[in-house]
Length: 184
Image (cartoon, rainbow, N blue to C red; front, side, top):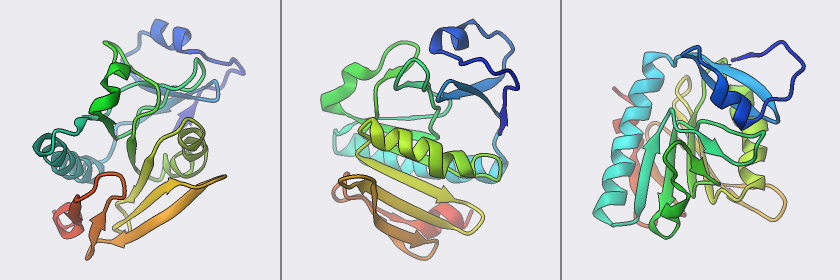
């Protein structure tokens, strides 16, 4: 993950004026160039997206979107989560160009260039803005950590390896056999 070298604080309006065909996030006013993900990242993300989308559709729960989707949390905080779920009661936060507010569930798939941001800066941002469930997927070691909000920070609801069945506290009944996700 590469950050812009200028000391400028970027806003969503600044971001909309960029015209260079790159993908960017804004975290704390910092413009962050997001490189194209590796194929393993795409494959794992595709599997998770398909499983989540099918479960959400079958149960009429809302909408599942995938990157690059801008999530506007504040004027200086615009991440692009890998996968996000918005419940049907909150579909009004989906606008033409972005999602206006915190999704119910966010999934971030780490890479060497994004891992620190996913685990620290973005994690704090998602907690502060009311994300109800946050998954950190590590393709290198084949794990998924599921976090739910506690009083002052995230609570680790479950940690799963590629041989286990992931359970979601938010999406009751969802069971993901991680062998199907990681053993591609």
